[in-house]
Image (cartoon, rainbow, N blue to C red; front, side, top):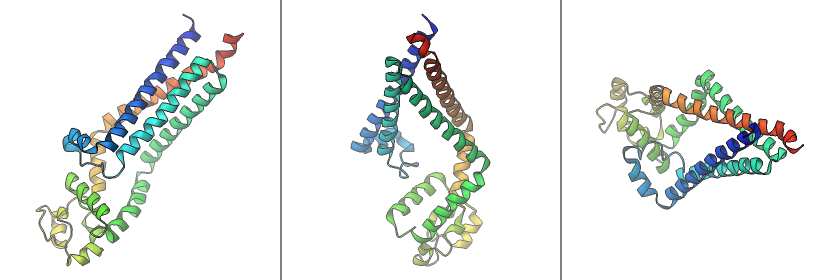
Length: 241
């Protein structure tokens, strides 16, 4: 078996895996959209953690559709030995890889900047919508209950809020270690419950090895895909001559 044939086979097998992954995500997205209750029961204790922030079914289906198209493009480019398709596949993978690297660099180098952006979104939501908007209230209640946290930074996010005014000066029960109602600001200050952003950061640090391993694995696959596709692209003329 020649090198070109070997790389062509690698290209085909690699993109078949992408196709299978895309089909799996699309099927998962349809399942969540059609029968979300059974999906949440399967997750068990994780069913309430973070699922309220996104439409999981739509997200999975969208990512799966992108993977399907990418896998089809890779398979067609290898099968048809098309320089145009190979170059398109290489460019798409390169764009995705570059975006991931840029996001990682920004997250590492500008974590405080990212925190500022999130705070600019979260604090007004807590001040103006918590307690009056059912969706915002449910999201934050679930988050604070599951993570044992209070607000984005701490209990001060609720001081002067519409919720505090409507409740006669009380804060959410999660802001006090006793989880009592009413939870007064002085008791919240003594409890010193951490903000949800800090809890999320600590969770990420605890699982840094897993997150890093997954990111490294994805990066290796993407680099391999680019190497294989550019090899086929560069040696296609020799193959046809």
